[in-house]
Image 1 (cartoon, rainbow, N blue to C red):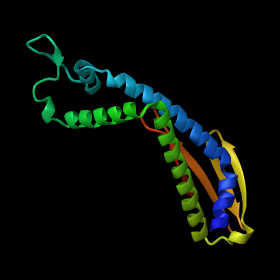
Image 2: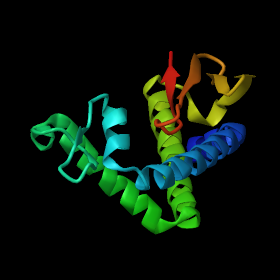
Image 3: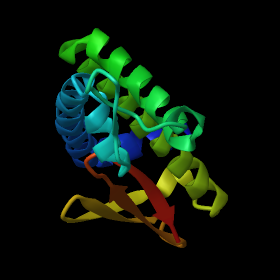
Length: 170
């Protein structure tokens, strides 16, 4: 299995570099978003949650009565804790943390793919891999001469959702 993992790792370096680059770009954008949200006042959070703020007796914009007994209050606390942690790390440490997580995800997905290929009954000594790229996704045809397996990636990402992918195999 180690030889198969090494072969798959060699054949998917393009995927790895694209994935790490996307993760880095996402982490920079997310860090900047956290810095921005770290300075939000209660009225900004009210807009985020789509609720109306109320005015205190000192004419300050505050959460409405009963807010702290809602699901949004729990979400707010979780978000503030995450924002605080990320801001305290600083950009460089946060980027390193996200890069390490991306590398571990990549290595784990290669091992899972190797295990799934072995389960298909391919002769590991005769394996040949042919890769095709379609944008950021990779389609791989893996064969031992007798059995052919197709594996492809699905990559998902968004402003809040960090890039991640998985291999599908048929």
